[in-house]
Length: 295
Ligand code: SF4
Figure 1 (cartoon, rainbow, N blue to C red):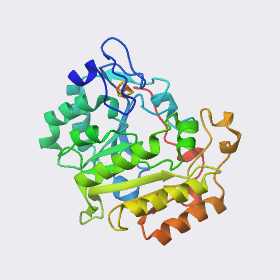
Figure 2 (figure 1 turned 90 degrees about the vertical axis):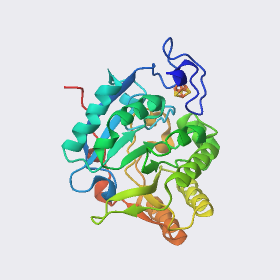
Figure 3 (figure 1 turned 135 degrees about the vertical axis):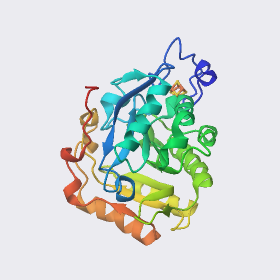
């Protein structure tokens, strides 16, 4: 529990004792999750035929004004479970046929998640994925060595001003770059099984925002400086739908245009990255994952 006594797990470095009061993420020292289930809407080598075994953790170290999952990340939706119950959840997902265990925004609870994995990972035999907004300390990423097979980090912004405006984290671009480097050092280039499911490696995700194509192009250029094209996979996401507080920011209170999307896609292709894109049919609220209550 020592990490929770003076919590500096993420770049917010609150230094609070989470058994007494929550930090910026809003979470105590008890694991809180919002949903456990098979999820079909990840990239094809992650979801496969049976679905990715996702566990959505409550709270977040970011404050994205357009967050699709804001009820979970920012409004505290979820329920408390123990490490043993979390381990049971992982095993149940495997029994349901999950292609992998997909930890969605687990950072505030990582010490507990690792203990839950210690309880059950010898019986899991499927890849463990860390699905993260990319706002991570390298030291925290290093804690995960040997536990995580596949990283799915976002690289949301190149511009510190945009990162501050839309996610409350001016230092995000630099921190995300260092986190992504640390993740790559652990897992290396993508490795797939005979069915094309990812076993090891990293898929960097980038959500294109309305009015943000120049920033998106800069994100891709930076990735190309950091990596050779075959080092990573790139997932360009165009499913942005104005949600939560997006209406307070007129310039992002719309969907991404085809022109914006194509401009960013062109840069990704010219950089030589392989990866994933979404077609037009994926755009819309129907694509936004639905989060159910415990029952
Ligand atoms: S995990 Fe939460 S309490 Fe800990 S440093 Fe990050 S925001 Fe603060």
